[in-house]
Image: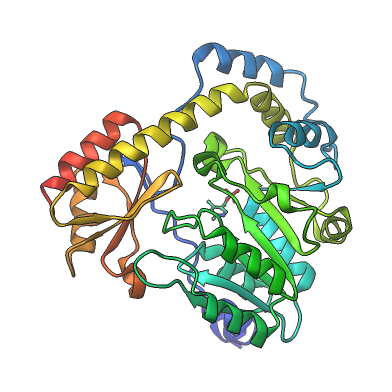
Length: 360
Ligand SMILES: *Cc1c(COP(=O)(O)O)cnc(C)c1O
């Protein structure tokens, strides 16, 4: 039997049908495609961090419960005292743990579309059905009749709501979110990856709903390389999810570095404040540019539409000038002719605007 034949018969068809998560090689470009914080730390802080790592016992397995880190996360991000925390190697891993814990025949993940692509990908990994419900109209709000219908009809095991949503940048209407939590028969996960830029959260509502979990990450606030996410919610849920966690998923360097970073949270907060202000300036500049329609964003990126049929050539033109953003136009539908730019440093944003002006 040929290897190709073995692959075809052995690898599940839904896995063979997936495209690998594509990350373009960055090289020497202005990188505005992945919602990274463009700022590093001041030299003195880097030295202090490096010195602190000298004591980390690399020969030992990490603290499996990451107790010290959990305590700091609770304090820094106002996790209610009676709620638990579960850590993941990025919030992606927590999405995967959630799916693994509830997967089974006729178990469905529901999410609005467009939204974060990993909800669909991970549903496929674990063999769950996935139902994407198109966002409505021009403002990317939740289509509530369609969401109600999908949740009821499929008796959703998991609903994911990115708040603010990626790639559209908007916050969903709070009343809509509350209604979804109240009507969903299964879990509702509020994915607050961009909360640092939105200043809004459902954390305070955890005690009110027994099917709500709040997902966070340090990635977008300036520590994407660390790979650390956390899920907050009722300890009884988290105790079950913890059973599908691989032991020692948060390595010693991540634990030590995250603790150090949280002790200096003011540095990251200052950077995210700067990014928020620059986002608003970038929005105004895009809004004033003929041939460009930006959509209001509460995150650290802006989705914008260009003239019909030109998105891919605009994307390529930017790349030729050394600027990498994200082309979302291939998805069509609500994302037809749409590109997404991450807010960079002021000089990066200015260069992006200058090149874009010549392309639209
Ligand atoms: C970037 C992103 C994540 C992934 O976060 P990691 O912690 O880096 O895995 C999760 N959810 C949304 C909506 C995102 O945009």
